[in-house]
Amino acid sequence: MNKQALQDIHGVLLLDKPSGWGSTDALNRVKRLLGARKAGHGGTLDPMATGLLPLAFGLATRFSHESLEAQKTYSARILFGITTDSADADGKPLASQPVAFDEAALRRVLNTFIGEIDQVPPMFSALKREGKPLYEYARAGIEVERTAREIEIFKLDVIDPCVDGSPSAIKIRVFCSKGTYIRTLGEDIGEALGCGAHLASLRRIATGPFGLERCVTLAALEAMDEAQRERCLLPVEALLDDHTPLTLEAVDVARFLNGVRRRGSWPDQARVAVYGPAGQALLGIAQVVAGELIPSRLLSPIEIDQIVKSSPQALCAA
Image 1 (cartoon, helix red, strand yellow):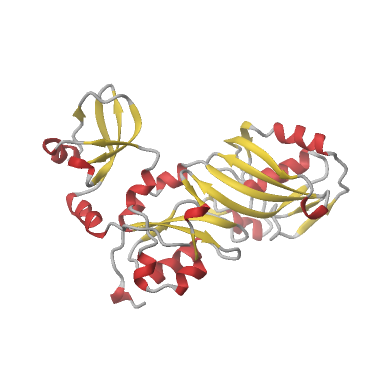
Image 2: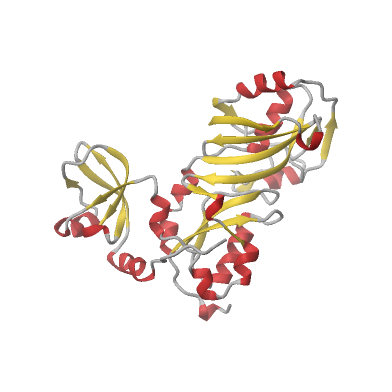
């Protein structure tokens, strides 16, 4: 689609990203298919990984940070006995060790990773040092010191303790906070078991309120016409599913949109999605402290009108 055909599209598309595609590459492909002028994704997936990748278009990018902050759920296959330089199947093998643990030992080790833990980000990551991604240092054979970050594993389930009949591979489901590297988690589990490990496969199955059941594949999108693709979009406010909705009277709307705090009998809320009269138009997000509505991210009247006029009404069948 040529540059002149680009259009302002506002909404959210839940893509089931295929393996072999980087998140930015997948985003750019969908952006071209929709002919969208502006887009962004809500949480990077490694090229090897598959699964849920929220894509925000137009004014939805103003709230895509909410997807980055959301809890994530992954299904992962860990292969024990072999470590790689990237901690996953795309890396070069580094060492091989015998695997000698039973299921009871596995579950004891997994339990030590539940809760708040410190995790050192992998070298093969997009985190930057002096303006350059860590993976560029890694590809040049340079090891850079990284500071451990606090993450949280809310739940860690063993789905299959012996994948495909192999005692060297397990499948787990991980419920975790933002910023968790499942590659590093798999590597650390292998180290704790004394045999090493790497991530053999990874699939993101949920981000916040979104699950795979609402996703559409890239192949399906490519087979659709323009109208069908646009019907795959969720409204902008879908990103605010975990925000408490709050409706303002018409007299308060203009002041709120100018950043003026409003007073009311609302209970304290850290995350509020604010709507105009009758809840017909999203105005922005805010928080309520001691009965005071404090704006945090606002839309302009022109932007509100654009969202109302282009609001998608239905989700396509994936």
